[in-house]
Image (tube, rainbow, N blue to C red; front, side, top):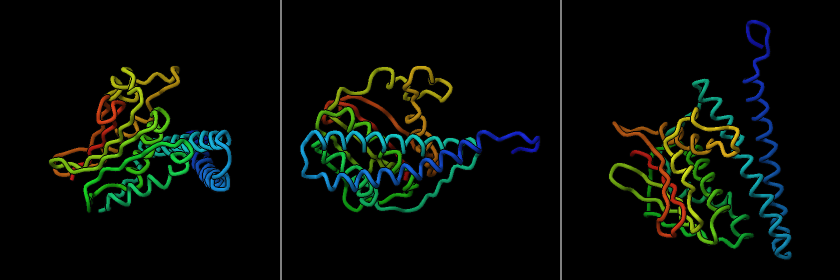
Length: 230
């Protein structure tokens, strides 16, 4: 309660989201364990499993985003910048999505420069890229490309797929603020807003991190780009 004896709904909601997130993580772990026992079952079973895993992962990402945005609104969003090997980040993303990729027979190719390192918040960057990879897995036909490389003064992550590409509304929402999103339309753009929030929290010298959306790339579908200054 606040000083007036009223319930602070925002704080209660944040606490509830945190508890739901922890329970959902356990559920995802159970789904992955079940998936390993169903590895040799028929394709229909595998399809249902992959869909359950995908939706649970999406929900978990949404809860983490909601909790992080609440903390950002309270000026308490934890940003832990440290030096990390890019290979470790890629490995963590692959491990989190291995079950879905296998059951959906998606080909995920990795292109990364050797021995890449950078200063960034590994947890937030993994969360951001995992969300973008989940979207690509949903909309791609069968192929996804994850590229990581240095360009000028930036460490660049790209997620490409061979799907239909981003709709024009999402390309236009690329630079929108949270006030521009219409909650009544279902697709709020929360993921994009959160991704940009994470990117802009990374600064070096006079440069600030950024994200961008495009269509085309090597696979002809959507291209999501994260740039982190180094």
